[in-house]
Image 1 (cartoon, rainbow, N blue to C red):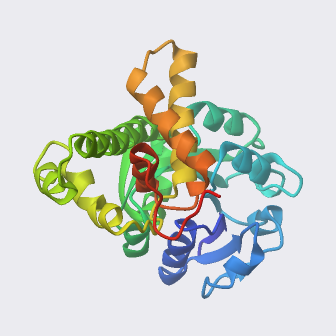
Image 2: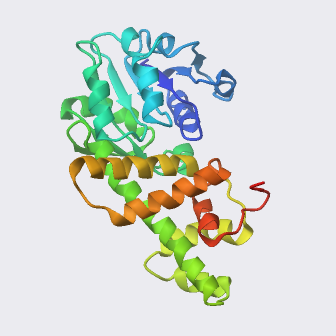
Amino acid sequence: MTTVAFCGLGLMGLPMAQRLVDAGYDVRAWNRTREKAGSLSGATVADSPAQAATGAEAVITMLATPEAVRSVVAGDDGVAAAMHAGATLIEMSTIGPEVVHEIAKGLPAGVTMLDAPVLGSIPQATNGELKVLTGGDAEVVGRWKDLLGTFGTVSHIGALGHGAGVKLVVNSTLGAVMTALGEALSLAEGLGLDRSNVLDVLVQSPIAVTAKGKRSNIESGTYKPNFKLGLAAKDMGLVTEAAERLGVELKVAEAARAWFERADAAGLSDLDYSAVVTEIIGKLPAGTDKD
């Protein structure tokens, strides 16, 4: 039985770790808030990332921010110090390629690394229908393809960091389309158009997937998170920071980042990322109060 350490039991991490347990892996789980680990059935709960990683053949990190990944991998009681030669770190968070390479350089000799961020949300994580975007040596990808296949469809994108890179590319479009939908609805409101009629048209337009998928949130004013707005703000920051380092001009991404950061600052961080629409059109989600 393959022993896997899983660090990070958030909205995505918990169902992913449960899929590993259900598939027969020996899972040792760690989460900053230990109480969340109690929802994971059949795994051993560790007191620290290092304890989870001790003796593990694969260590998975699924965390919110680059800072969290740095801490869990390289900090006190981090996984790096506990990993043995032949083990693999599989980094599945959205942190960008620069941080992936930084983390890889700090790993012990003989420890390999893959970056494998995912496309999809809670339903896909629960049902094993994620798109796993993997970067790293082909031999290492092959070694862990069955494990990664527990989460969904595995695509080998290229060298280490390329999975993280393509995830930024995808998230740049998600942020742009979501804020474009918000601006379209704001324009419609200014023109005095009926929102329901406008949405009827938008669900047949080039942004149909987003309009259809988030219509119920917008019409009800409730935004149960599948992907938290605060994380979307973080991701758009990663996109524009990468573009700045590369000398690439991304005016649309910069505007989307500004909208998400405004919504984040307005207290909407823990709502679904589609709640950015309420910041754009100036109407609060149901049950919130900026005061």
